[in-house]
Image (tube, rainbow, N blue to C red; front, side, top):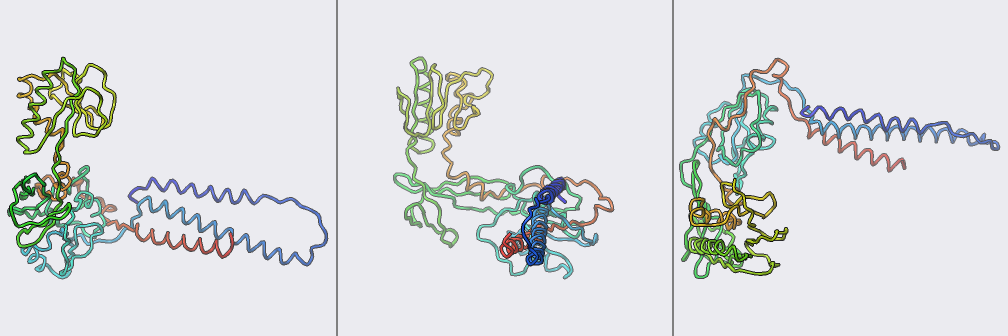
Length: 422
């Protein structure tokens, strides 16, 4: 069992049994006339009802027990061959000719599986998915206990995106083989619609680094609605087309913050020129109600929570940055008044750029196509040493079988209840 503590809940099966027995208390005796001709019929009917009640009670207790067993993560001990080596191959490596030659040279008895949920068997005619999913490596390590061998060789791309949560522990001897790729890849992510031209944003990199590439498109593309089609390496690809709307910034400042307002406006002008994007800054007297890119509060009056993204003046002499998170969603503190020294030394303009989050449309795409690889030493799980004799037994996950048995019992219980009118 992966979670044996759930088995304590099996004691709860005594509750419906106790209720059933307690409800069988002695009935009141009422004297009536002769019922000699009804005695035999009533007796048979009463026995039938009691039998049905016990059958349904048993079925329902079994259903509850199977649910608890499923939550406990049932496992079955199977015998394994310590000398056998199991090979796991990440699905996206199916087109690696060097790896295919190695797999073809293995003996027929060698076990070759795919590095994905359930560890299906490797097939020669395996078809690559159009958008390969990155396996969750450390979660799969915890499932490797079900493999019938102590030695496991994993051929993987070792993407950084596939490593999450804490480093797992294992008693299996896992050898990771990282298939490094020195070739530079390029993946178009999206295009920006500017006033006079189109700008294509692509993701470039290899196993060690990933960066953006921006280029102005003059020909070789067509667009319709919110998508753009272009030819990449002889293939037509479609990417989202995003309109670059003007970024609006509202500043609410008292007269004593006039210098700070000027520094803010100068910073936004620099960002607008650097990004080649319109940023409109306006000073407003009253609290704004419309949704804008950023609202800035430079007043002595206490700021009350409002919708939108806010940069609120709140002095903090201990802060080493001019802008810091407040702990509230979309609310940030400006920790000091602005001057020439701190705006340059503390890179105030760069902090404003991160605050505006102008790459919100690109960020999820970068996460999806990030192809940076990990070093083998960082990828390895914690090996906890040679297992004891009892622990050497391979545990096979039988949750799926228990689930289908549970479904069968539920169907039988419903059919029985319907037929017997219970």
